[in-house]
Length: 636
Picture 1: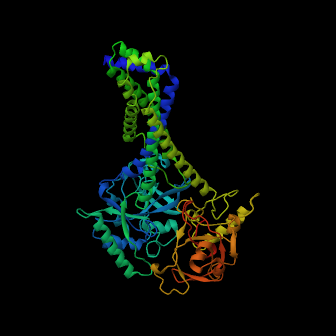
Picture 2: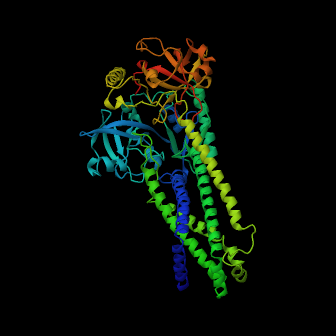
Picture 3: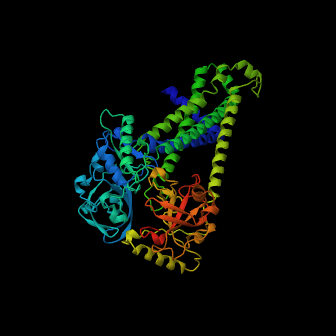
């Protein structure tokens, strides 16, 4: 211990003598370790850490892969009852509501789940009870609400008397029957719900028929369950495909046979994309750490060369090479530990910001990161610091072991005894190579980002304001919706400075849950099964002035008018991609017809430019725009 304390004191004196070197080394290592700690924290939250439920290793998510994760509620029921691989299957969808406690109303986002949801997950309530399958007795039969712990804490201030209280969801009474445990935050890792409600009551809050519409592929977002003992994932997939084949034969118009897949519950629909993204980030972070170690190795080698006369004198006075190397390693480990501590502090601050970041206003999306409660992040930072200290600390070992005190002293103040390829030269080459790779990767990423931000969106974002509304939250339904929407348009047009106003549902991209798809068929098609569809474009319901307000270029034909209502013939405006895919060209599209899933013949009256409909990085997709006056349930 005495020797160790002497080494520490000597190392501290040496580092204080070279503040420039010390600060540069600490900051270099702090940036590298901080970057790796941040990436590991995100990877641990999304990939390494399972859902916080009992027996997560046997919990799998299922999907039929055309529109990732989505399927209709009747298909889910058949899948649940006919499969032989799962103990039981639960499902959930999203619900966006206006929640009124009697004093004030606010927006809330939650899960609409099947009655067996909590039983399948084997989760127990913190307060009260959960709803169960026995509570479901048909549509709108279970007006119950379970609060998430976080929402109960923030909205109801931990009031234990909340159980049994009645609140309004979109003007419909629901009774709070329980509170979920603190560690349970739903079954989609980056979405934390405010509440859980039975899916049999979702028609009350959304206004749409989900329970009996087999063709509504957006009735269920994700299905999951525990595999039975002894059943392998491959056997489960084969079983699900057999159920899919049955559904395809029994309901050919509503169900198109698709291959089933299994995925980790919590990321089923996004597992592959998240893993590929995180693998790329980890690779870049690792390269940054290697570059930092190479840089510090060069600095340490140069520092050892500058101290060659000191080393020679210490050797001449009887000091052992082992003691000198131990002192150099002590300096390296001090720098690595201080740099690791600074990098860890910065990573924890950044991870806290990421945990509170909400990329989509009004949506419950956040990164499930808890740096304070995750000891693995601290362990990883410590290991990286120690390994880094050893890596750049061993660089001057060869110089010390081969140092000749007589030659060094004779060489004079320069301390140079000859010029040959050294470890420093190799490290310099490695460092330049890694930095060149990192700079090139960064330039490619920035170039891609700039191209995305300055690409053709299909609308003009400059000088444009988005106003989001959900009339269902205020109790509007049926024919009252378009009447109110028209009043809103007229009221906004009267605001000074407003030039044009248009209405569209769930658009543009980056709006949470933006866009829905629908099968369309060529006019001559008689077999309207999904497998016969000519395309599956995005569908949007828009007002007559929408294209003018959005700055969307009309390439051919006309837009909509206020006469394109439910009493007029069905018409549509399509984008260039749709026109080319269905009709061959823009000029051939205007005046032509196509069919919807229910057999409705729709006439194309206009063609607009292509745009982005779900994300800025998507490939060009077909899209169709329909008059909102023919879709009374659409939301703006």
